[in-house]
Amino acid sequence: MPMIEARDGMRLYAKTWGDGPPVVLIHGWPLSGDSWDPITHALAEDGFKAIAYDRRGFGRSDQPSGGYDYDTFADDLADVMAAMGATRDVSLVGFSMGGGEIARYMSRHGGKGVARVALVSSVVPYMLQTDDNPHGVPQATFDQMTEGMLTDRARFMTGFFKDFYGVGMLSSPVSDEVLQLSWATAMQAGLRPTLAAAKAFATTDFRPDLASFTVPTLIIHGTSDKTVPIDATAREVVKTVQQATLIEYPGEPHGVFATQTERLTRDLLAFIGGDDRSVFSGLDDATQADRQDIVDEVTRETMATSASMI
Image (cartoon, rainbow, N blue to C red; front, side, top):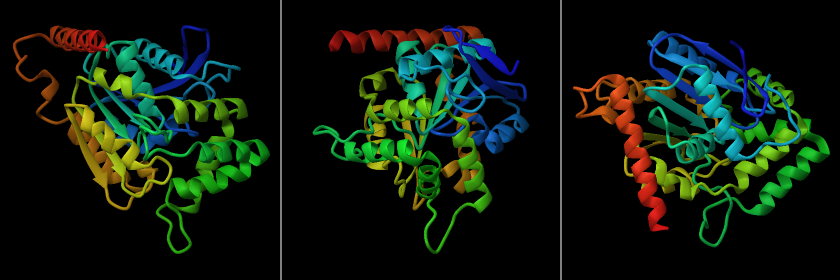
């Protein structure tokens, strides 16, 4: 079932490899679900049902004129999960702007079915520099990105991916072919979706969504990430989310799925497939369905309590 119809009629390309507990992987900007392929393959080989899809506007999915906001993105994630049968013991893994889908799904959809989440080089909780978010990215930087894409998107993406993968004058953590593939994938997306999605990840404040993270959360981030600075993102999340664990990759850039593929794969497999399965700790006498119902109920109660305190 490669194409899934979202609730607004848009078609989303999705693929699933392997059988077992579901792991849904959400890609970053401006790539597609294929960027996860090495890790998707490893998950399938290790006994998981790996699900990757192309965000609307990107890859092989439809390119509507609008709908590039995180409420819609979270609804798309919910629709993919439902269509793929990912309803129990689900692991969500989001890279870069894909972390935003997870944050908004956890709050907007009550974290239904989710047992654990991983945020990799994620934009959560807030990218934009403001008085109360001093480590964020200045608005001028995003304005320059927009101008560059409007003027010559092909040239802009060439330079963008060098920072993305930490390519410098004397070293390159990835091959020229990886750079070329990323550029070609980015150019599959429409200009309008590319601009709108960039605005969404640059300006959406996910700090209110963090209260909905009531399941074990793994955060992985490179300390030399120029695209999504670690101080404004990963290091802030771990201060707020009680069940969060942060693994920093020293000296690594944004695109760790390519620069540290083996390590990232090991860390994700250890977290997702660990013997602990700590989200269900103490619930061994319940059935899997009952255990997930208990987790979902705890999430709903936590969200309701947080809302009453606002």
